[in-house]
Image (tube, rainbow, N blue to C red; front, side):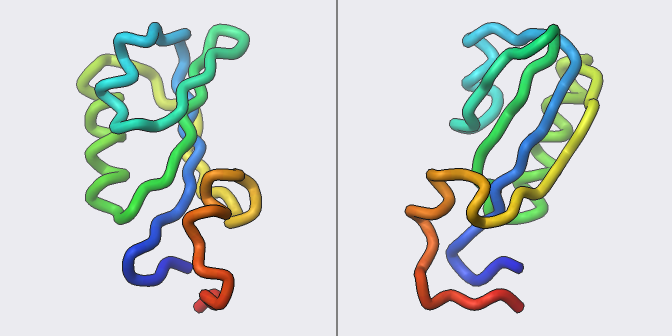
Length: 89
């Protein structure tokens, strides 16, 4: 799953199209708006960081639609951060 020093790429979807001013609240995650929703995608290194992002979503009064851990090969930036010899547990 995860090894020391690496994270998991997540896709988090919230209802509402967020403006770029919200980007600061989501620690460098990529934001894309689509059909009235916002898709946040990025590497999350551990569960406390994930819970922090989810708390922020809640604190901003946003409706959480989906949280999904993506496979390693699903996000181009994730591939560049992985050690090719790293194995799954």
